[in-house]
Image 1 (cartoon, rainbow, N blue to C red):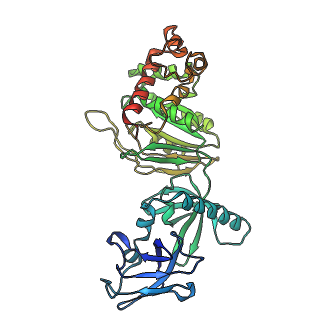
Image 2 (image 1 turned 180 degrees about the vertical axis):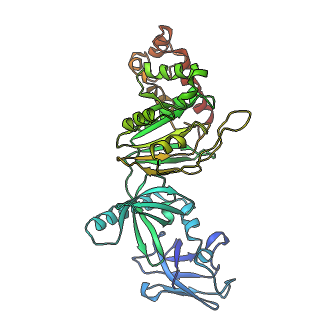
Image 3 (image 1 turned 180 degrees about the horizontal axis):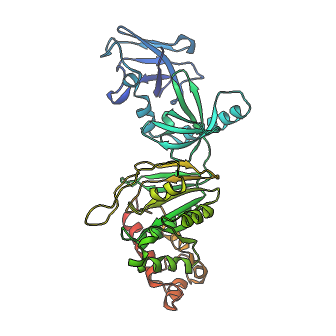
Length: 409
């Protein structure tokens, strides 16, 4: 078997071969390539013999140096190369990203014309170095990911193929939409792709946070994705009338809202509203997203959990976003619950249009760059004074803007 080694360092057609976190295969090992090869994301065929590294002669590569410094004469491909880790973590140049995108377009054209074994599919679950892909016939396959595809998420459309070493995702197709949020390190990451609807779920328990709902609404507006606000656990509303009032406040300003619970009628109403769209369910941990999806998909058994004792905060029972096909068409993406949704990646000036009731007043401001915080002759502040905008919603807007200003990266 001849494993593939990535070409990493390029300098006048001299390439050092790298494996894993241990650095080069040897500081003395280099290969020289002809003029039409040696792209940084290319690979060469190599195989190991005692004290020697052999390069596939069919690729017209000339071995320059080879010192007997390999610690192991027999090693697995992952131990030998660290290919996925290395290529997935390194920073690509604009030229490399452009070439990868062009290659993806070519692959799709070849696949459509029947010139390759690539087939279209959808990522239904993404794990560290593998993904579960749903093929066009509905069958699912566990596929390895190419190193430059480490950013794939649930809902992504991809090309994949069966190879001698197993199924592999070969390229990503263009996204029509995506929901993003900063991770714990402040780096912007996609949560779900190719989404038609964001279903924002809250419940009487755990205690709902209107500001979290507002953050989802702003993110959905920025991504041009429709929203549906769902108040779950309707059987608890008699003891929590403030939740019904919160839902009504969103309905009154123009958002699509509904209540749902354990009854068949409520489940059918939600199913009808979803239609054949691809919807991602988001919200705090413990609001019942997975339980709601279980009712919509009786053949699925998603793991659900009770609220944490004492403080009534949700436990994380969904650990990775996962796509489920609905019997009557459409897909549901179940996402892990969160307690915060950062918007540091958004320009503060773009937050106001994400508040639907602010929009009629945005053109009434005296200054084009009005922040709607302290300026004179501000249309939003005037609407607030005239009670055309509720003070709770305006304060939520202020909290988001100030949070962005304090945490922007």
